Length: 160
Image (tube, one colour):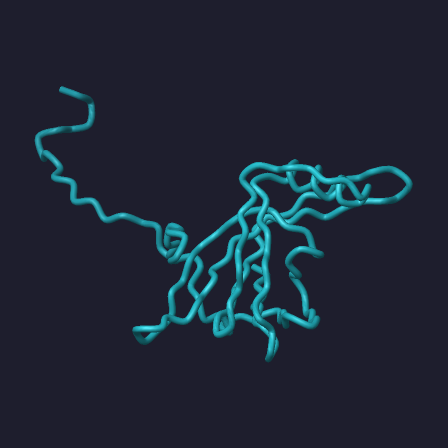
């Protein structure tokens, strides 16, 4: 599963990210912005990454929209854990979120700008266990179940 860690660059006051409730809502918003128009999309979740915090994002799936002339858009379904430092206790506060983004809204590759650094994580580098935070079922190597069955010795298998 592809994972990315996003941190703020030194001196950045913070960065907003937006998660869309559906791929359709994201697509409509992207098309509207491209035409330099405005639109109100309900249920967009706004996240603010503060200094001292980080975000770990996991790609869950994606959809492509094809618009003719060879033009297409990739819309990505993600889930993430956003951390923020606590002021009166040790440790961090973690919140979980999921939604739809595109590469320009939240990078899922190595990327850097004036506010953020995004880095693709390799296996084992993640600080957050998103599977536990989202309550995924644990998948073990052995799905078998032991059942004790008392066999009646008088039953010869023919039902009599």
